[in-house]
Length: 120
Ligand SMILES: [Zn+2]
Image (cartoon, rainbow, N blue to C red; front, side, top):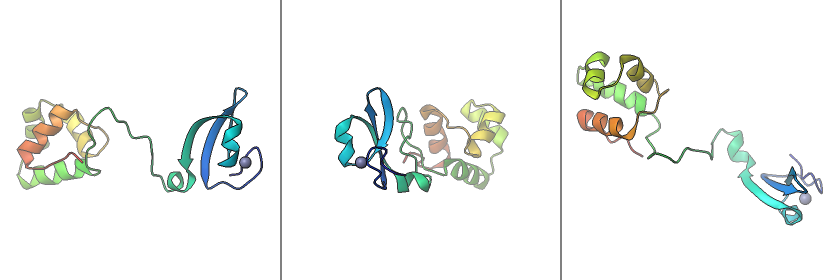
């Protein structure tokens, strides 16, 4: 990626608004426009997202796996666990696959029942 104003090779992406259009610029050229955001290009390349959703407390990365393993250790079926939580079986399956982020109340219930701390 290069600065669209001076052509310098960028290791950090900075987007600024210049005359209503958005351009990627180097550190020096940010002064020509209104800065919109700055992002480290390397970090985004290896898939680290800076855009975590901050509305709820963060869960540990592999919460689904932890839940699933601990539930099996305690010899609980998904159905039983779902009934305990008040969560549909299909939803619990998605939670254990890490595809669905349960609400905080459910997370707490799960943690208490399984003896896990699931919040990051
Ligand atoms: Zn530049």
